[in-house]
Image (cartoon, rainbow, N blue to C red):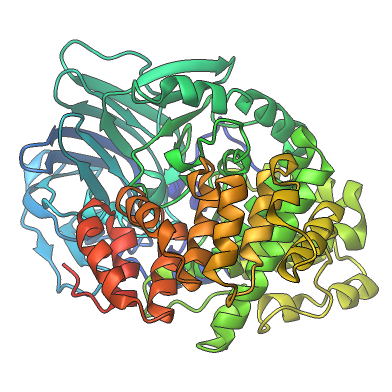
Length: 625
């Protein structure tokens, strides 16, 4: 959200990143390895210098204090250091460092100057023989990774992507540095702690929980949640966690996760993380989901009662290969995580639910991508490149539809160019041969040329430079066809022109994708009276599907349909998902309803995660904390 080192051999590179012999991977070509070495020198978002010293394993001992909204902890790292090493550098932001030990001895440490959104380097002296460094510290009460939910049912969750892990654990906070970890966490009794690791399924009597993650992961996949939750198994390798009031609904909604897992393994190889479980978080979670290994964090807004929004689960599951298994080397390479994942998500949805569903989802993705490309081209056209340019910027700026959906359509073009069987074999081999490694854009393009686009005619037909380093959408962007959505478009046109009454629409026969398409394509200037007609016929304002509700509320704002404003206010106060917040607040700003936006935001802001408030503060000109 969600590098540099120099090695003398490929085996050294894998050792530096904590890879274990239990996860073998084919050796990259010399050209690939060289490019990766060069790229590791340019992680603009981390102070770490792993050429000098790199962390390979974390032991975390922590106490979660809901009264002070802090975590007090000691982070102990195993180190691999170079022969001339003099220091190890960790990333910190807003941490109170109490003491530092190297191999059990107290040492002097230095915190460097604070830099916007990047934080401070924690410099710790080491020697070539140093093995371990331990940092005792406390978090701040407003650490940006945290959201503390107070009241009768307290809850804490973290969001580390892209560079927020450093706000709750001093670490080498770069996607190119992988490490294993174990943890011991103390929480208030009657609450359960969960992490991106092997997890408990029942509460302990004393509030003490232990964890281990044997596969090496980057810091942005560190995750912690604490709350009153229960566990339900939904398959041999899958289960859900949720609060008591949501556990029955969650068990029903996500009961097909095992089918998705089987479909994913059939496509692109064995799942590498043993279990795939899902935790339903409070509605303030700023994203739809976060692919924390072994335990996806998910918003409750995807619980619709009919399993209609489970494509999000397919997306987070797909990340177990694209992102978690093969990881973008830097945030400039974010499309290598997300574009691959959207493609994989669509293939899972097709395998489990059919081509009609996946093509409707692909059509909606294309619609959103075109709109976002148009918006970005007006501001910074280079931000429509797949290869991002985030030096000096918050990597959160790169989390747009470009990485996700332009990346997806590029991979779909590759599939359509070489044929699905060849492309599937290419992807399966790619994931297997680069498992638990990092990948950057240049190295992937070399791999692509060597293993898929092996002729000049194939290269010419795809035109990779236009996709990776070109602006906008290339002319050869694949066309998605959905007969069902074409029919929706025709029905919408007929209703707008007055040729069909709202009561004659096949609304109750449509799937959510069709309802969303209808609402999101309404003319901006459609009258409030026409929306009232639609709502009278089908009670759209009372829908329990949050994707449909979002599309309805956005149009209600643009049409000043005031009967929907009470639902709008409740939605914005209780839901913190940035995908919904940004367009709704922007619609109020665009229609000169800033006063309403400010009034709602004043109530809602304390309930939002920092990832959301950062975006909303900028949009509304609100002073940040």
